[in-house]
Length: 275
Image (cartoon, rainbow, N blue to C red; front, top):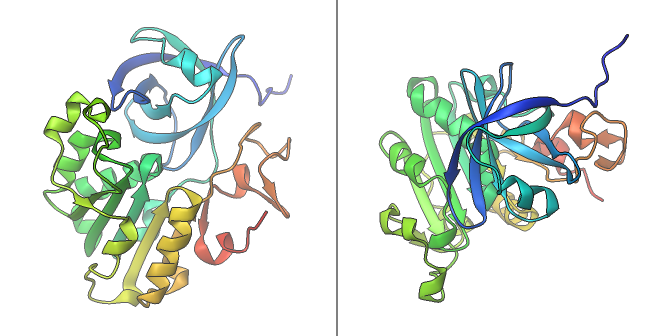
């Protein structure tokens, strides 16, 4: 009998890390090949299924950073270490670190868009000599929305890291306890810091841009304005991934199935995908 591609497997929650009131990272048991930027379909019986990007990986586990935004994720937030989830995947192409080796690597990510590139940043943080230079710009809504604070502190030791927030928190009630340990940050949009990026050769760069569509649009415009070649840019499209295997068509744009051909695209191809 052939394998049913929709059949999920059980995965144990090994650890839960709280970032904000709405965003937690779940470390889940998994053995297999996986790339940053790929995604899993995560499900709970009676509640449904949701696509979640891979935010980290290691021996025997993957990490999924989940935002509490709906029925499925609300229920997942009720689970603890030792509980289990159903998963299918990984799906999509993800980021291939081989494409960025021996380049001047620039990564610009906003909000939960940091999750899909976190694995790339971690890889080159641990293998720093495999890129000529490395600049990371991360942007969040406000200090209380900053994710991966421990990582940000660690990354700062061997790369150029710029942490930005759109604005300060409005009221004390917005401020989470973990903002007390927040690394130094700037106030402003990530696009403001593109002219300040220093590279030896713009033609020898590899640039990853991930975040909300509007943020990616203006970030890429800013990069092109500064003279970075469009063929050096990769983006990740956010779509409603349902089946994950190119059957349902929910993520289809023209003839492209984002769940199969993406979600990571060279900008030269991704810019042509218009709803």
